[in-house]
Image 1 (cartoon, rainbow, N blue to C red):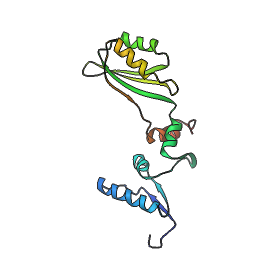
Image 2 (image 1 turned 45 degrees about the horizontal axis):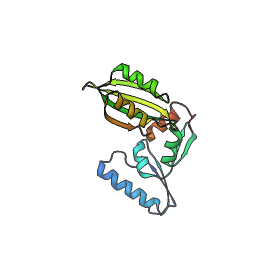
Image 3 (image 1 turned 30 degrees about the vertical axis):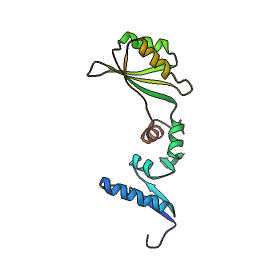
Image 4 (image 1 turned 180 degrees about the vertical axis):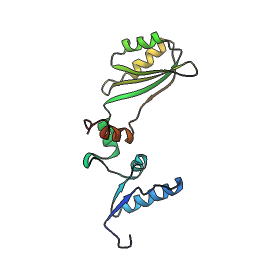
Length: 169
């Protein structure tokens, strides 16, 4: 940095740092990026997402994705995923949910230690069945403890593009 380069290339700039140092380096990188081009390479994807404004994913020497964090995650998310934690739901009533709300698919059904169930539900983005799910749960006597969408993470995008194939790019 003595020669004030126009382009700064950083490889794993926060590797081995404690959390306070990571925050300081992140702010330093953002400040430098206001004045010059900063290229950062890292395997710590949450750090990449917190620091940069554009991401390029390279697999086997090929660029497989290029865009903002939001663009990459939006293009990768096909179906919407929802986690529903309920109590007082029988296996039969879960099956009834599938037949009542045809736009969803139950990908997982796990029992909790407290005797409830955690359902992993997928549905097409265009068909949002949350109100139907809520009404079915209420009518079936379920107690909804949590209903939350799963947010695609940068790690999901990276793995999908580099391990599972390139059909999402």
